[in-house]
Image 1: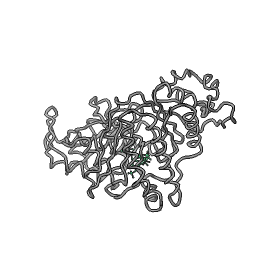
Image 2: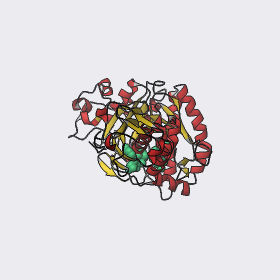
Image 3: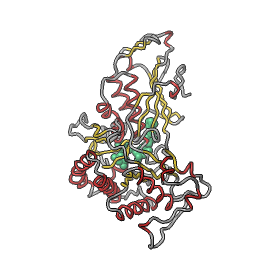
Image 4: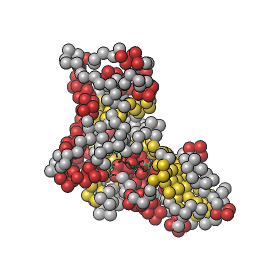
Length: 421
Ligand SMILES: Nc1ncnc2c1ncn2[C@@H]1O[C@H](COP(=O)(O)OP(=O)(O)OP(=O)(O)O)[C@@H](O)[C@H]1O
Ligand SMILES: C[C@@](O)(CCOP(=O)(O)OP(=O)(O)O)CC(=O)O
């Protein structure tokens, strides 16, 4: 180790996306290594709307590893953080910063302590996959700081040990997590099926139904399912393998009808195995069910499906529209059925890519109030409308993978002290 008076701080900042599974991971065959019972496939979400930013730093003056999440110090003692730190340190390489006069030999990383600060630009632990973006960003930024030689797929096998779904956030576009066969988990990693440009017509609208922390974590929920559900084995062995092959084909051919059928039925089956768990787990609520029925009615009324939906371990709906035109029509339907509370302004009700709102011809609350029932529900019993069931909507699209942010203004730690800014 070198450097003036050992006072130096070396740091790296990176940004990593979140992802939404369209063929779900649910159930482990190894709890510690986080090895799944089936393959899964996800779409990476555009980091401009949903992402984690993490700054990692090292200095001989740090006396222990420390981490701050969204400005609050959190413990790094948990087994999952420790696994990631151990696996990354074991692969660390020599690092030299000639400008700053710093030289770190690979053996030094075992003794040097780290400061880590991370920020999610969306609610943490609310079923929006914060753990996926968060753990992927931790692994990716540390790998850059410690000059690891591993590629993103090999890094995904480390991120997997922080949170299963995190391994899929090491790539943009469409990603497959191959469950692998090895007992040590070396082949349980993510591969990119197609990048975000491959199918760039898709538009994603997320209905944030509840930003509250959920009752049953994914980790304990899937453990209970594996222990008690009679259906989960059939799902993992018989259903998912066929769906994975079909979904890969649908993505390759941009076949929206097949994509929609697979994504919707797989989400529904995941929630069915949750219900088949004893005691049962309910992640969706009435609002989630009403969103499903709104989309299903519309899809059925059209010649070919317009929108796919999928729900993770929470009530929030992730809807994938075939293009901008259908996304605008979807937004009209959603605003008609789920208008904001009177004191909410439209600007904070629709966040992310607001241009979809313009496409839908909606400029203000008057336009929302003027929306009429879509044709597929005309002449039928009026749907119940309840303001405030949806907290807000996020408009986004498939997006790119992790990136290093070299501009120091993005750093979350002070470059002189290594403490949060
Ligand atoms: N930016 C981050 N950096 C490191 N760890 C994070 C970060 N964000 C979240 N986490 C970890 O993930 C935990 C939340 O994960 P949890 O699975 O409960 O919720 P979620 O990921 O938002 O939802 P879900 O996985 O069901 O979609 C946090 O308590 C924290 O330990
Ligand atoms: C429903 C899911 O979102 C479950 C995600 O589970 P986690 O990856 O959060 O679980 P752990 O591996 O225990 O950390 C489906 C999916 O993302 O594939």
